[in-house]
Image 1 (cartoon, rainbow, N blue to C red):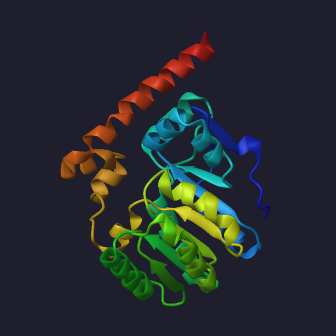
Image 2 (cartoon, rainbow, N blue to C red):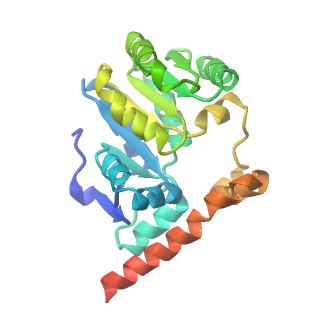
Image 3 (spheres, one colour):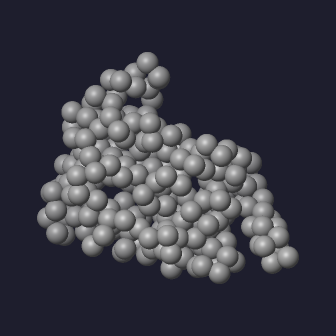
Amino acid sequence: MSAQLLAQDMVDVLGVRFHRVTSAQAVEKILFWVQDGSHHMVVTAGPEFVMQCQASPELRQLVNSADLVTADGIGVVWAAAQNGRPVPQRVTGVELVVSVLEEAQTRRQPLRTFILGASEESLQACLAALRSRYPDIVFDGRNGYFGEQEMDEMAAQVREFGPNLFLVGMGQPRQEKLIHGMLGRLEPCVAIGIGGSIDVWGGTVARAPRMFQKMNIEWLYRLVTQPSRWRRQLALPKFAITVMRHKSKHVD
């Protein structure tokens, strides 16, 4: 299996290149990369993050340099279809990593996983839950509360652990910027930005009920349960309008 993804397997959504992969294909690529002795970066991007990339050419360039970018949001799935190159499915960070861990556990594939982010309480709850669920996988971690002056110490801690899989949950785009700047300082591994997954895995924050997930309206559940997110959710209609404007320009 080739570690390289071909250009024809991609779709451009407002300047961000997404790979047209299923969750199963993404898992296979990640597990292959874990063993290939190189550095790899995986980004899971939804409409909010695409709009951040619209506003920052530097961020867009960073994301487009990643080895794998998946459609983490039904809005991106819709936008790819509007471009005539649909992605096969939505591939979220929280589900993708769990699938990687489950497949590695099933195959007894050695995997050392370092998790960076969240509060100490949430991180420890997450580590305890994952160690119980995946006893053949080695886990370690560090909370996300550190300053610029502690970056070298943090990098040394990660490097000493020697992860195959480096998971960073510090919110977008901070986590992607950290991974991009730090990856070369580590031994070969696969790094993935995981957003708020640490809180979900540790049980600190509940994920949307299955009904909301199946209907692809997790954003609505989060808005109802966390009204303070309303400003962030404004990116969704802006994203849809921008996609349609972009499409009309190309049609004309």
